[in-house]
Every structure is written in C-alpha cells, then in structure tokens.
Amino acid sequence: MTFPESETRADVVRLADPDDVVPEDSVVRDNLRGTPPRLPPWLGYDAVGSRFFEQITELPTYYLTRVERGLLERHASEIAEALGGGRIAELGSGSAKKTRLLLENCVRLRPTTYLPIDVDESMLRSSAATLRSELDGLAVTGLWGRYEAGLEWLRTHPGEPLAVVFLGSSFGNATREERDGLIGEIARCLRPGESFLVSADLDKGREALETCYNDPPGHSAFADFRLNYLTRLNDRYGADFVLDDFVPKAWYNAEASTVEGCLHARAERTVHVPGLDLTLHLPRGRFLNVGYSVKFDEQGLADEVGAHGFTPRARWVDSEAGYGLFLFRRDQS
Image 1 (tube, one colour):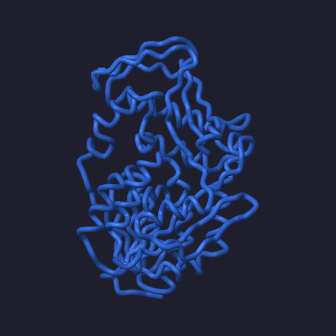
Image 2: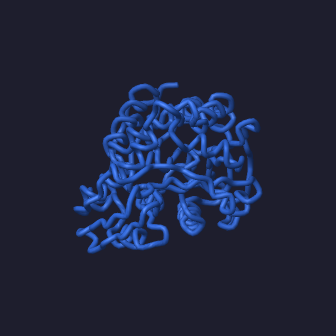
Image 3: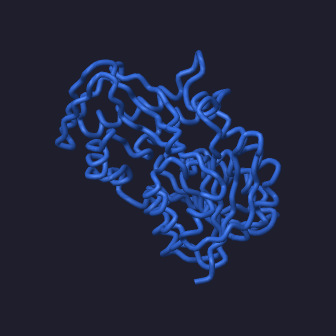
C-alpha cells in the first residue's frame, strides 16, 4: 500500500529540556532515602543503558523478548485488526524491533502514524528513521521524554483513533501505586472505544525467574545494565560510587510475586551524593534496588487495568512460557 509523500514522514518532538528527561531530583532523593534505597527504572535508560538492555534481550536465558516476538509473529495481523486505530503510541519503544511486526500489519490495513515515546533520544531517532524508511506508508513522530510527558502530548494533540501499546513486560517494572498512576494517565488520553495493549509476564516461581533475571555463565549484560545506574548517579549528581564495591544480583520475592534487581554492597560503605545533598550509609550486604519486575495472574491484571475504565477484549498467551499480550478497550464515559 502506498500513500502520498505528505502522509509519510519521520520527526522527533522534544517534550522537555534534556536535563528534565530524567526524574526530578526530589524523586531520586526520596527513592534513595527509602528502605531499601531504590532508583527509578527509567534512570537507567540513557544511550549506554539502552545498549546494555538490548544485550539482555539476546541472552539465552532471557525468554521474555523471544516469547513476545513469537506471539507477535503468530498473531500480529489479528492484533493489528483488533487495535483499530490509525495512530499507535508506544511507551518505552526502545529499538522497536518487535513493534515493527505489528506496524507492518497495521499499514496493510490503514494509513498509520506511529508515536514512540522514549527517554533515549538517540535510540528514538534511529528507530524512527529506520521504520520510516522501511515501511512504506508509515508516518512516525517520535516523542522524546518520559511517559507522563508523552501521554500529555497525546491528550493535547487529538487526531485519528489512538491505541496505546506497552510491550516488553515493562508494565511490571513499577510499584502498584506507580502502575495505577500510569493506567490513569493512559485512560485520560484515550477516548471511549480506543485500545490499550499491554504485555505481562505471569508468575512462574523462583527457579525460572531467577534464571531469567541473572546473567548466565560467560555473560555480563545484566550486571553492566544495573551498574550503569551508579554511573548515572556519579555523572549527574557527583556521587562517589565505586562500581566494584557492588555485586549485581536479582532475587525473587515470592510474597510480592516480584523479581527485584539489586546491587549488594561488598563491604560497609559511605557514599556521598552532593548533587542531592545526600549521604548513604550502606552496611555490608545492604542493597540498592534498581528494578522491579512484577509477575501477574490474569485476573489480577484484568482487575488492575479495569479499575481505570477498561474492559478486557482479547488475549494472546504463550501457555508454556506463561507470558501474554492483553488487549483492553476504553469504556464509554
């Protein structure tokens, strides 16, 4: 299908000044003062962190990307038809490699505008240019900024029917309170009848999950990704973290159905973060949390999203891996 040149373009909109793309200083400070100290997940996705995460997706033990891609390969045509929108916005688009499978099917059905939202400007520009050049008829407007800024932009720039897509099981990388806030923001930018597609990893127990979220022998992608958070604190806030003082490791919290990515102190350390007017005292073994990965059951996911005015409409689940894509429709007001 071919569309006029005026309908096929790739742009990137800066939604904030570069220094404002990462979380506000007060948010980082409050998280570091918590028990345990925690860093917001999006702080790790600068250009370096994004490259490390791409390496994670290629690990032989990291099934999430492989299974999600398989679901899209088998069901992209059906999903594209069910989405129904001429505009597809994606939260945390990254390289958009998997999303391409969906977009290929969308442009076969209708003129489509892709609106990827991401904090990594270089990745956003690269993926937008690639998709625009390779998919005839696809218009791309990249939105460089955090999710909240991207959703606000969508609210103030109405147009063709919209679908919001959140892939990569990233929905589980936030606390329940944060997820509630995000779903509320998504609900406010969608009109009745518009779609929200989210991927979610289902709970499957300690052994499988800790194998997935730690580096297999001979690899260091998870370790490099988690330690990059400390590099970010050193660079942005003048912190004096020594990376070799910390051991990266993930563990499964069965009570919370959550995998927690951590950096454990090898010995007692005092770390200064002058840019946040903060000093951290870390006993030996104390950890910094650099990532949550919540694992869901299907009814719990439906209840959580449904509480914000959505109705489940379809599901595509790999029963062997326990991973799925779930489509919700915005209810009538």
